[in-house]
Image (tube, rainbow, N blue to C red; front, side):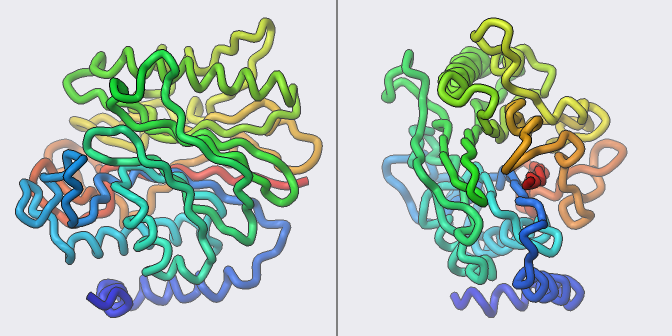
Length: 346
């Protein structure tokens, strides 16, 4: 399949004009523009090749979801469009992604779409998730330099008994400043709210302890962003575990998603109710920075353009324009909305 032909055919004239304008405008970036961070749960971005070590059979041409090359490349195209549009004239510097099957899928996204114009690099680690879906990151190499990256799982659980996504840690240099990124896709609540709760608690404690360790080195200057799909709302007790430092008297982390209470709007809709599963949590050192990178609570938001939404067929209001509705293919983008954070520089 010739991907460029597929991409242009799939885009309508107005959409195509928008993306061409993005391409032109982004070449003229000023250093005064903020560094944009995005997180996006892509909803089962599988390739069409059988991985005998993973439970990916449903997303094969002969599988339950009737996945095929045309649907795969349409999905790749949809993710690329969302990333470009999320940049709003300037493609994001950092994009955390989840529900990506493997590195080859990332390479198709980065090298076989118009994202190739921006020199994105890839950070990817295979996770022990049974279905093979991973947490990963792409980044603008003209703005971001990756210093180190690792996959984390709770030390209390052996790797052969950990059946979920690992947490991706990435240490970066951005515009001469150092920032630590911790990207998450916590165990799902499939089977009820309490399903996966013990594992989420283990991961929350692991991430909190890692942040405490970083704080012991950098103190109030620590700049860290913990973000991703936590599979729970911002007011869930397990998020409180993550936010509560074990260092006496210190409140290191602040959840920007607190300003987006579930029920009003969110990143995921279930049975007519919006939930705020995708969150961005930052260190006080990033919020109160006197030099270098700086974040502001008002610069976090849900990215919800019309093309990512559709009328909910069962409940009043809008819902996400997902790729599948149950087992039925509807050809949309994802069952989650992305979140954005603009990071300034002083």
